[in-house]
Image 1 (tube, rainbow, N blue to C red):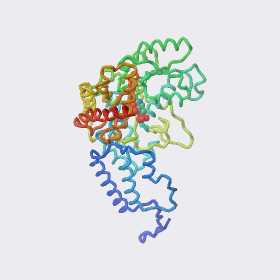
Image 2 (cartoon, rainbow, N blue to C red):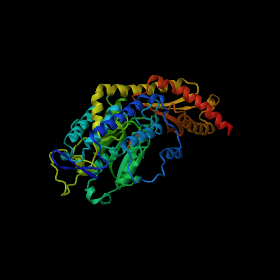
Image 3 (tube, rainbow, N blue to C red):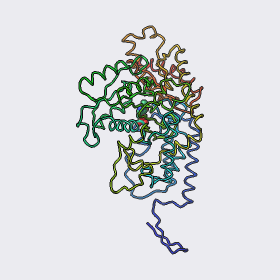
Image 4 (tube, protein in one colour):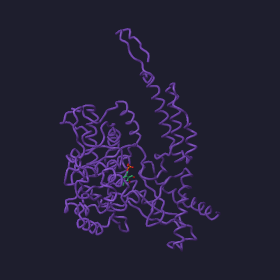
Amino acid sequence: MSLSTSPAAKVKFRTAPLEMTEEQFRSLGHDLVDRIASFLGSIRGRAVTPAESADEVRAALDAARTLPEQGSEAGALLQNTADLLFDHSLLNGHPGFYGYISSSAAPIGTLAELLAAAVNANVGAWKLSPMATEIEVQTIRWLAQFIGYPADCGGLLVSGGNMANLTCFLAARAAKAGWDVRKQGVASGPPLVAYASTETHTWIQKAADLTGLGTESIRWIGVDKQQRMDLSALEAQYKRDLEEGHRPFLVVGSAGTVSTGAVDPLPDLAAFCQERKLWFHVDGAYGAFAAGIKEAPADLMGLTAADSVAVDPHKWLYAPLEAGCALVRDPAALRNAFSYHPPYYSFDVEATNYYDLGPQNSRGFRALKIWLALQQAGASAYREMIGEDVALARHLYELAAEHPELEAFTHNLSITTLRYVPSELRASVGSEQTEAYLNRLNQLLLTYIENSGEAFCSTALIEGKSALRFCIVNFRTSTGDIEAVPPLVARLGRQAHAELNRQ
Ligand SMILES: Cc1ncc(COP(=O)(O)O)c(C=O)c1O
């Protein structure tokens, strides 16, 4: 630390090693923004993934290096780090990225993250973040409106879909246990049980585990041919549970399952819950934002009847990671599930204090990137982008269905699943031997696709069949990119087939 004297005020200012002058910050910032702009401008020409081994990535990082005792010049650090990240990352903003459910990030979100970090608001309490809190409140209302959920609902931003679903799970547990479960714990009443389809994302296991219910409290309900929850199986399991002295409290419906994008019969599930006074939660982490578009299945609108909905702006609203959101019909339900008032926090109770509504205490300003992007595009352009993603997935399904070496499996929302089938094996599809071989072949093909750098997809297991899974939550993907997929899969499929037959 050095001290300098201001000639005017004769005041001694501290100059910490982390401080930057206004000029330094401006110059470093301009340089970094220039680099990011070039990176985004060149993204289409880059490989989707460098497909490096962990050893190669560690070598590029010089991973074994010890913590430096002496500092370094900030400009060189930022330059080298930008190169490290641009050259050794999987680029989910690439138009050929179709893996998992990771979206391309809106550039305004990148700038929002810079701005949010500059203000560094702690959105745990209104007093610590007056404008940021009000922006989050407005964002929550806009998100609810966008999916047709009551605008006066409660809600807050969290890190992603897992945390949003967990937050809602805790709200359901507090509201429906029938005793003071927060104080007395889950062992103080009959065993609580929750219902979800076998296609439900694994967040529910973590939720049952973390909330003390245990994963055996999850009643896994089977699905029909379209991968949607089987209502008669739900009804039968519910009856059995009552007879055995369990306490059903929650039904989870998926608004777009993680594997195939299937939408559960949400209106029927809502009616089932209403009749039995169960909490109805919808996991809309992937699909909820499609609720307002004309291409969406009608059942999706059933989410408007839910007690709570998890949505994920870092999926289909193209927000940079991280941004999930828990919406709860009764705003008091969040406070009832999370609020404590220690003597060292004396915040104004009239204002929104987010530490009171969720598991986090200190909180970052996640809302800004969503709030800005919603305004940059507007709701109608958002619906258009989501609709285009759905149309592209349908186009891929149709192309695969017509292709002599591909088998199209499913298309729901913006997810299409398919597999490569060598021409000579077409006739024996369905036989045990051919199916086992096709599973091996398509697993290997996934690696070939990754290594090509031209596209990136993930896998789904559909009735025991290993499928390539293409999920389009990517505003950079165009028709040409999608039309390049079937020939790429067929070409690499032939190579993988030849490789397996050489072994
Ligand atoms: C339906 C569904 N729910 C929950 C999640 C978990 O979301 P996150 O990875 O943001 O925690 C996912 C992730 O893909 C999902 O598809």
